Length: 258
Image (tube, rainbow, N blue to C red; front, side, top):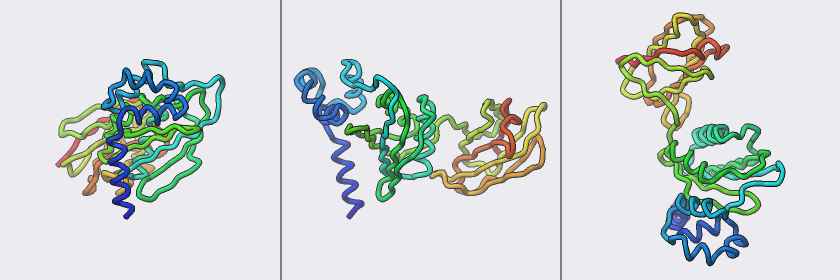
């Protein structure tokens, strides 16, 4: 029964018209204040993205506060995968400049819902959030404003952003943070090497498509090159150092092997 209810609710959300989007985003009071302007200039069939662009361009979305305050945005993921959803959400918030946030309520049934607490001088920019989720294969399908904002996100085609696809040719990677995410396909092994100036304590994690851990390789040995078997059903590989990211922040070399 819950499954069919979720499908029904999702269908209603997906086919909401632009006026309903606007009402949800602005809140009932603000929407009815500008209702005539919105209905006379906004196409009823506009997508959520185009509705957000319209509202922002016309100065109707008020995101800023007079001083820093505590906000509690809620994120509802349908087609949920809590580990994957949370990683992408945290990465997005950090890239948008939010660092001091933590979950205050988490609930999982047919959906995965997480409410964050953060101090900010503004609400999250919904258009920036929509664009950020799109890059990760997710679709922001509705936004609802009460005291804070609730974002409903479909992550059926969720993926990691900024991964490097493993190839048969050697690739040189550089990341000052010393963490590398690799997307693998059709390779049995991966060869990982540091630069000729560095040594490395391998710490390599293999994940499936849902970002569940399949295997972890960790060693205190200090080496330059290591060849590792890639487990079946592996989709992503995270490469870092067991002790300090400094050892590989200047770069590594990777190569896929059959």
